Image 1 (spheres, rainbow, N blue to C red):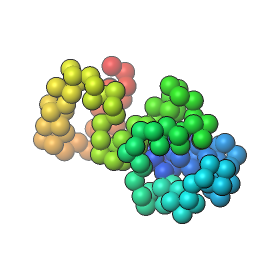
Image 2: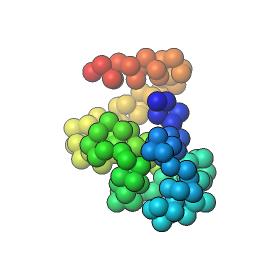
Image 3: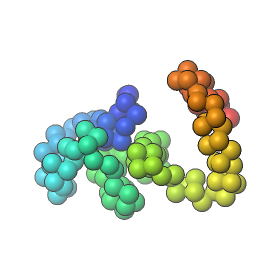
Image 4: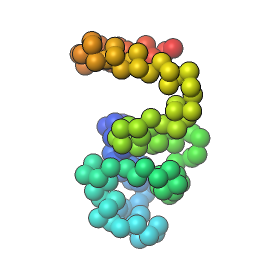
Length: 125
């Protein structure tokens, strides 16, 4: 799987299709507006910030709570909304170090290749 090309909407659509549901079928089954879900999947509207609704979407997309796809789903929603995931915000040590990361990223103006190398280093840490 391509993880929705790194977008919340793409990942949402990927999981819906993997669950064997059409857009209309998904919306009819769970009582969602097809136009709203279509805009969400196409990136024309932001993911909901409401954690309960995000969790409901995830369950209806057959994403197992606590699993890797659950975390990806929630992280993509936060990123697209310009927010930190709640578990990151609650870690005071990590949050205290974030300004250093921000300053470094602003100062360095990393190239795409450098950013990919940084992400790889972080994954291994």
